[in-house]
Amino acid sequence: MTVQTEQASAPASHEEPTDYHYITTVQTHNGRLNTRDGVLTVPVGFTRAGAFKYLLDQLKEEYGSPISVLYFAFEPNQL
Image (cartoon, rainbow, N blue to C red; front, side, top):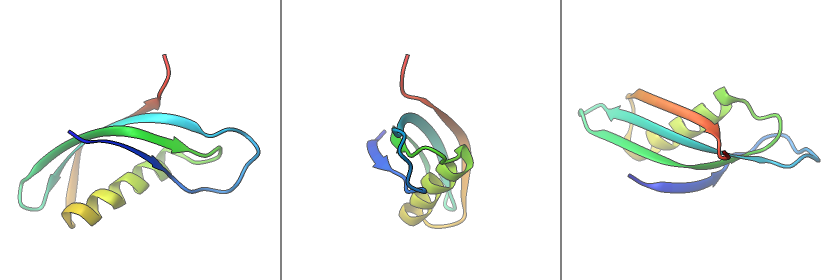
């Protein structure tokens, strides 16, 4: 499992970005499984769908395509 802190890009805003914790499990084209988690700093106005695409694009870059998402959780990183 890898912990990563990343920043997604979106339209500029005067409000503060929010940290989200994500967990995802993917299966690569050759059957390899990978589960990872991390914190993604999301600018105001960024969508859950945009964050998912951003993270999926990184995984496709790392493992190639096609890739299957078996699990995805994305919640604000606060209690």
